[in-house]
Amino acid sequence: MDRATLCVQAGYEPQNGEPRVLPIYQSTTYKYSSAKELAALFDLESPGHMYTRISNPTVEAVERKISALEGGVGAMLTSSGQAASFISIFNIASAGDNFIMMGNLYGGTTNLFLVTMKRMGIEARGADPSMSDEEILALFDDRTRAFFGETIANPSLAVFDFDRFSALAHSKGVPLIVDNTFATPILCRPFEHGADIVVHSSTKYMDGHAVVVGGAIVDGGSFDWRAGGKYPELTQPDGSYHGVVYADAFGKAAYITKARTQLMRDLGTTPQPMAAFLLNLGLETLDLRIRRHSSNALRVARYLQGRTDLIGSVSYPGLEDSPEHERALRYLDGGMASGVVSFSMKGGRDAAMRFMDSLRLASIVVHVADARTCVLNPASTTHRQLSDEMLREAGIDPGFVRLSVGIESVDDIIADIEEALSCL
Ligand SMILES: *Cc1c(COP(=O)(O)O)cnc(C)c1O
Image: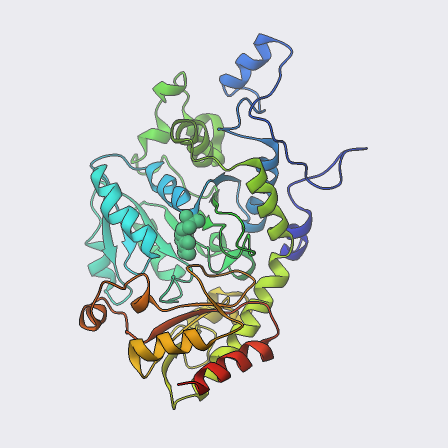
């Protein structure tokens, strides 16, 4: 079925007389009629729920929907996008191992990988699209376990070169993990372009209403964990689970099964049933919303490009003259590129702050990718401690504004911007 249909229908199929809408199973625990049946669950011999830290029927229905949307073999929801990114790597890397990360990842992911995971003895090695293949391949060694990138990078809006980086990762026998948060499975299905594992911050477009923090990991089932002998945690007995060998017992779903039965069990970064229910409501309209976000953002980006009196560069992969446009056409459905547009004010930090203060429809928030148009100026908020000079060194223009275009009438959004610009 088409993804628009899966958004509405996948994951939950009520039987005769059952509630039409996915129920919220607000229960930490599940009843069994015999000790033997429960024992079989603990041995991973029969499917079912034992404790909500590990699985829950409401959460499971939403996992099925997201897996169907991505075209995977299984998915696991997490309490946040951060937890999903962490588990996606930690599931296949231990102290002494390393992995390759694209240098333009979301700031929270960059800190998790470079600072926190380093303290666990797992090293992230930065790659950049401007590097040659030889330079990137030189980052790998026999302890390299994965390659991690973002479909549409937040906030640089670079579009990931799937063909190139999946070939590099696979030539070294490691899986490609992609954060598909900004594109969502409506605009891009990374498994069709060589990715093996997908992660999401569902907090953004999937929820879409800014009501609940969450994340997801989806297993494409495509990676052969045995081939290079590099993934003993999947191909050798797990002592914490009666010696189960995930690759034998669960085949294509080995990775996602281990993530749940071992890491979700031990780390407990569990989504609440209510959170999954709210996420599901958001997912039902994802196809409609992301198309509207994308068409609105393209109109806004074109308007901003026309305001050369006050605005310098405008970046949006949907613009024909964007350096990302060719990749956007190749990997993003119809070249649609979500709602996030960034641009820089010629007047620098002060102009950016005055522009933002003068907006009336667009609000100033630390969030992106929900139904309401919002703005953020890193120089006056998240990067406030840095001087203009330090900002430029970090690759951030002091007048840089990130605009997350919502699903309101695009005429109203542009009128709001026009009025705010007239106040400068
Ligand atoms: C927000 C975000 C995250 C982190 O997700 P949380 O749900 O806030 O933990 C990860 N990746 C990207 C691309 C994001 O935009």
